[in-house]
Image (tube, rainbow, N blue to C red; front, side, top):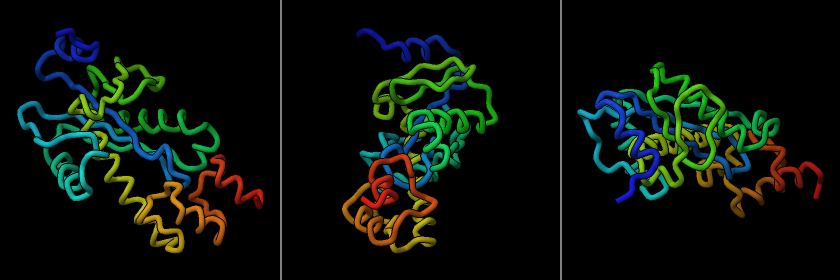
Length: 204
């Protein structure tokens, strides 16, 4: 069986190498930060059940996130704000959040494996892995940490703006969220460069 580039790269590293998985969550919502996570697993303390966060229940994600914070070699978050998303565009803001997450680890990576097709501009040896959150344990771990962190953050925002229902839809463009935007207008949490938000600002 032919190995992928990332598998060959990992196979060529020593057992104690610092392999960092990176993923982000929150590209699609109309509101809130985009949140990235970086994770380094402990090869001597493997955590069972790591998978793409989208394929796990909220309860399972939260349990795994707690285990990762307790047992992984390193875990860190990075964010980009709605203002940065509007200024840079969502792709560049996502890459910025990823870079911030890796920088926040406080570890020197031997290899960074990033979910998706594009890499941030950084000095780390890195490989982009398509569908990495379902193929690479380190990326799966990062996807879980990022998802749980962003969901918690959006529930906190719900306490500030309960009329928008952020605790339910987490900022995604559901019918309820779009109706709340029309009824109550735009908050500082909203991404003004996104078309449905622009439409409300423009009165359309």
